[in-house]
Amino acid sequence: MFRTPHFASPPGPPQWVRTPDGLARLAGELSGVAAVAVDSESDSLHHFPEKVCLVQLATPAGDVFLVDALAVRDLGPLAAVFADPGVVKVLHGAAYDLASLKRDFALEFAGLFDTMVAAQFLGMPEVGLAALLRRFLGVESGESRQKDDWAARPLSAAQEAYAAADVRHLIALRAHLAEALAACGREGWVEEECRALEATPASVRVFRPEDCFRIRGARRLERRGLAVLQELFVAREAWARASGRPPFKVLGNDTLLRLAAERPTTLEGVARIPGCTTTVMGRYGEGILGAVARGAAVAEALLPSHRRPTAPRVSPAVERRIAALLAWRSEAAPRLGLDPGLVLPRRLIERLAETAPADVAELAAVDGVRRWRSGALGEAIVAALNGAAPPRQRPRSGRASPPYAKGDRG
Image (cartoon, rainbow, N blue to C red; front, side):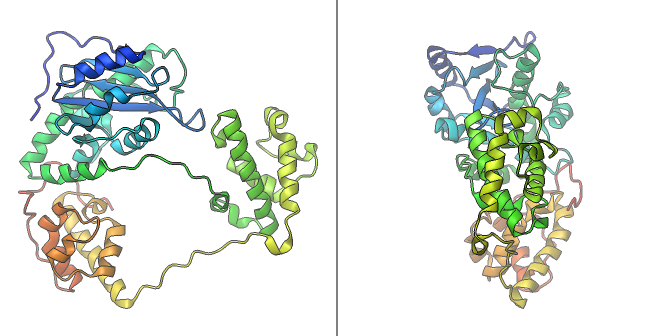
C-alpha cells in the first residue's frame, strides 16, 4: 500500500512536455514507478469534434508533468506504462478520461485505481475530488476551470496550477482510500470495478438525424414542423463540423424549435427568431432558409411523426421479482452504507428479474453481477428473487459497514 509522500520541500512547478523526444524521456522515467496519477483536459465546450488537449501525470515523489497533446499527437511512448498492470494508474472519475484517451490515441489501460469509485464503495457522502482532498489531505482546491478552452495556448498560470492540482495529490489520496477499504474489507470490490472500468470503450460520437425528435419540446411540433426540425438539425451538424464549433454554439435547440414552429420564408423572418443574431444571420441565414424550405417540401406521406416508445410487456412474475429486489435493495443499501444504485443498479435488477437465477452459482453467471455481489450479497439476492425474506447477512468480504456510511440516498 502506498503511504502519503512527505516532501522535503514544497513540490516544484509542473514540467511541460511538448516534443516527441521529451515524451520519450518521460516514458523512460515512468517505466519503473509504482504508480502514476493521470488526468486529461479536453475542449468539448469550445471545439468540435472534441479532442484531448492536455494530459497530466504525477509520480509518487510529487513530480507533475503536463503533456501538451496538441503539440505531441502521438502518445505511443506512454502506451507501455498505461498498459502495465504493475504500474498503478490513479484517476478520479476515470470513465470519461479513458474513453477520450482511447479515442484520440488508441491507448489501453491496466492497473487502474479510480478514487471516485473507491469513495463510492466507502459510502462517502461527497465523492468529488475537491471534497476528498479536503477530507483526507486537508488540501483546498482552487477555482474550477472545467469550462476553460483547453485548446488555447499558452495556458495561464491559473490553468497550469489547476491542471497540476488535479493529479498532484491523487497517489496520496489513493493510499488513504485503500487503507479505509481494507478496514471494511471492500478493497476487492473496488478492484473488480476498476478492472471492469479498464474495458471502457473509446468514445465514439454517432450522429443520427432522428435524434432531433428527442430535443425537449419537440413533441409540441406537428409533423411538418418535425420535418423542418430534422432538416435544420442535419444542417447544424454540417455547419458545426465545418466551423469546428460545438453544435449548441452554432444554433441552440430552442432556436431550432422556434424556427421549426414558425418556418420563416424570408431572411427578415429568420432574423426575428430569438437566437438568430447578426452573426448567425451572416453565417447561416441563407442556409437556414434552405433547410426550412426542404422541410416544407417533404411529401405528406413521408412526414415524420412522433413514435411513442413501446415498453416490452413484462410478465406478472417478472414484475413481482422486480418489486422484491427493489424492496430488498431499499433495506440493504443503508445497512451497507452504499448508494442503492451501487448495491444493485436498475438495469441489473431488470436482468435478474428476467433470468431469475435459482442459486448463487446461476446468479454469478449473469452478466454484470460481479464476483463481489454474488459473494457478499448473493444469498440475499437469490432469496429475494425466490420470494423469501432476505436474510440479514453481513457481507462476506465486508467485515462491517464502512466508516462513512450515509444511509439510503435513493
